Length: 98
Image 1: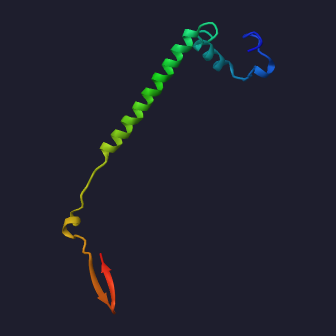
Image 2: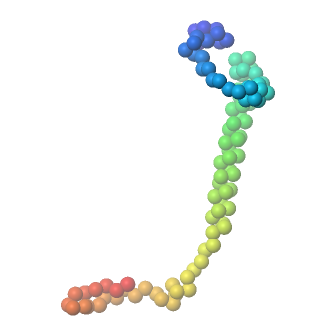
Image 3: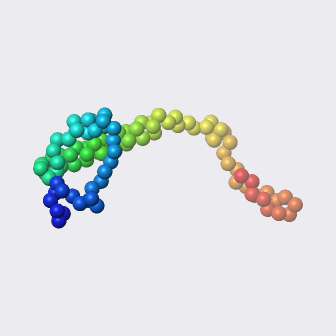
């Protein structure tokens, strides 16, 4: 930035209005800024990456559990009534019967 880090231009500022409870909660979560403590940024990035990996693994486990909960059945009529692929002539035309 061309100006001092703590003195951004109006174009560089983002203003968001929040209620007091949200502000107090945010204040408790602030450890330091990335300008003052670059190591905090690295820790936050590692934390976020670990969180994403954990969520991906939970989703994978949910899918795996859903697949294992499926009941696989074999119809007894499949072996009793095998398909019959034969040709039959009806009114001079060849018909295939399945």
